[in-house]
Image (tube, rainbow, N blue to C red):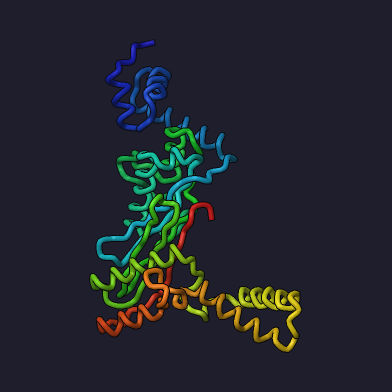
Length: 288
């Protein structure tokens, strides 16, 4: 067996990011051929990915990437097995690369992302193969759990990532994309992350959700011995509170609990003479 120089091992490590001992073994197994050694490491990563496929990947990061024009953005959840790996530079850089590539190619789902090639930093591999390579590099199951893409026509997009990268959100708003509107959108994104709304407006709440809440409140009232003639009024009152919890526009604003989000928007429109509205939002929390 030919002697493998430390320089060659380092070159392979710099190219692949794989540990020195694994790089040395790959070169020894392939007679010092760099290309064959890289293929060896890719196959090893694929084999490890298959071996770890049944393991639980419950850690990871949520990433948001909005373009410079603030009219398109990506939010994704990339999972791994341990928090130690999730906080590492290699994993976070990989997540960021996927998000940037998704933004560049307007990819709108995790499944569609699998066939999209990453850049030269990841050997121009499709994401599906790059994940296998990353599994070999980090020794943990890596999974792109979900990915969302938003493009605003004549509006703007803003995102918020909570410290720790376990929770993030992205909002789409209509209206002119002024600096003030972008700041408002970022506040709304923070609101979404913190307050967990499920819809923008009351009319968007699914009927089955409302029916379920009504039945819960009704049964609670009856179990407390409330007279039948008062039950319907109690249900209506509690349903109003439910709307204030799950409807974004009806939530108390996180920066001023005495003001609703709808009031914040109304004041902004009057102050800046802009027809700004909230069109949609995405909220990702690790593991949900």
